Length: 233
Ligand code: CA
Picture (tube, rainbow, N blue to C red):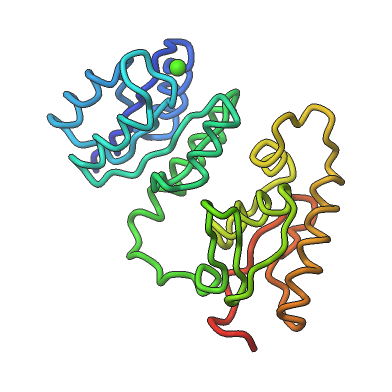
């Protein structure tokens, strides 16, 4: 059986080396391109099973390259991001990336993500989670509707709920949420996230008293329930 080809698009040789080593150890065949141009050429010659894409490239932004790649091949993409505003764009998933990892990252964690994205890609597309229908996110108005009712949310509540509702079932750690929603997480404590989740829960409860849309994963963080009914019970 041939090994899955994983294309690393990253301009820092140190990171690329570490990744190639980790991937090779885990039974993948890594290929490395240091620029967008080289990557587009390689993809045309030999489509990879998955792409690991650095957002900050010298010749083209990772976001722009992502669009161009997707025009050519339907390949899963895991972003490497360095800044929280980059994470924001990736997580907004307006781009449809499959996953992202924040620098600095452990190569082991990244390889685990690669495996899980490949597993997911091999399966038929799951039905749209009902939770995606319970929440409507309006970024322009910075408003979220829950079963059609607009929620009165503070800035941080909006950010938190938006992140959770954008990916039902995805477990966010408190650190991830802090990085996503707060501008500077240096003096924010975990309990800030907890306190905001509490107030969001109260607002959701006011609309749907019997539902528990935000699930706590003990010792890890929070996720939006995937099994919400399509209509208010
Ligand atoms: Ca870079």
